[in-house]
Image 1 (tube, rainbow, N blue to C red):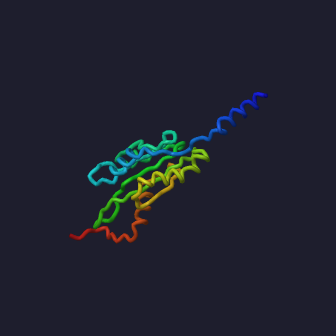
Image 2: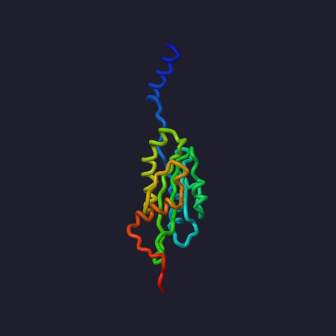
Image 3: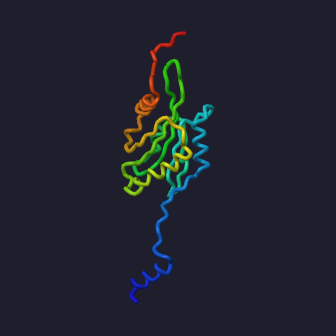
Length: 165
C-alpha cells in the first residue's frame, strides 16, 4: 500500500479526520467581577476590556481614563469593552453603560465571522447597557461619539444650560 493509502487508512481507523475545536470559553469569574466593578457606583473603575487568549475570553484590563480604554484595542485583535460614562444635564446626572465589540481591520475573515457567536456568549454576563457599538476603526474610539450615542438612546434631553436654585 502506498504512503498516502496508509495515511488514509490510519485516519479511517481513528474515526475520521480531526476537526479543529473552535468553541470559545469564557473566564466567567473574572469577566463577571470586572463587569460588576464597572457597574458599582462606589468603584473608581470606569471600564473593562475582554480579549481572546487563544479560544478563551478573559478580562485583560480595567481602568478609569477613556484614553487608556481606547489604547486597549489593536488592529489585529478582537475584543469587547464595557464602559461607564456620566450623562445627563445640569439637573440630572446619571451613569450610562456602553458595550463595545471590536474587530480590528487586520483580523482575518474566519475570526471576523465568529464574532457574532462569541458576542452572544459574552452578553450572557454583560447584560446591562444602554448602547451597543460595533467598531472596526481606531478613529471610532471617540468620547464625543460615545456620548452622542448615549444621548440618542436616552430619549429627550431637556437641559437649559442653567440651573436655577
